[in-house]
Length: 274
Image 1 (tube, helix red, strand yellow):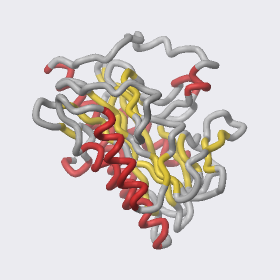
Image 2 (spheres, rainbow, N blue to C red):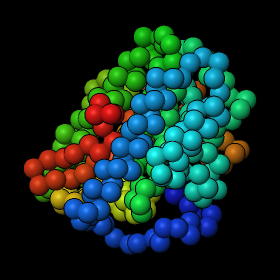
Image 3 (cartoon, one colour):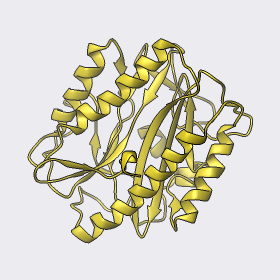
Image 4 (cartoon, helix red, strand yellow):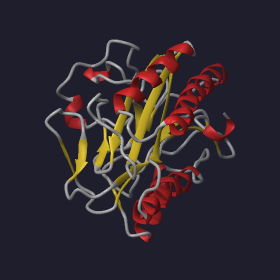
């Protein structure tokens, strides 16, 4: 889940869990718990990808996600977070992030559907997002979805102790630009663990505006590139949550919670292992 900086400055901080400062290195015990919270998220997203069909609403998916998260003894990370009303973010076509589930928002064949969710389990969060091609999408939409997922893994492949955030940011940016798409710069990935959003910011493009953090084993990162088919710029709707492309172009996103190890990485929200 991404959060706008200006939105964070306008709303109260969540009261639980207690916010900690700085980059946290998780202990083996904490990592084991995060594996469970991440597995819950991966399970829910895999199930949603298999059940979604035209005619359903984004509220239907939200109700299903909340039910399943609670059945696995966790709570939805997003629900109530800075006032957000859903257990998932459901963003369709030109909606970039933070789409609020709505019983009037009907999913249609050909839609590019982003579903982002998180689970809070025994004190730790997991966070992940997928983009779903609803039935048959246009070749252009299918290509955007494919490149977005590839971009995520290009970034993840750079992760290991001793690497830097710019290593993964550059790999993502290069892959996106090579295919003619743009990286949304208004939202970033983030550390994740006791808090849904922790330091560091995990950016998807080269920049000197944020620290180029050296990665250490035990860090847990939510890596989440967002690609637009057109302009990289977005605007936020009147609901103060839903961000859309300024030119109505399609947008796609993928996200994983990733553990930094001494020799590489472990994808904690890996759906292929469910």
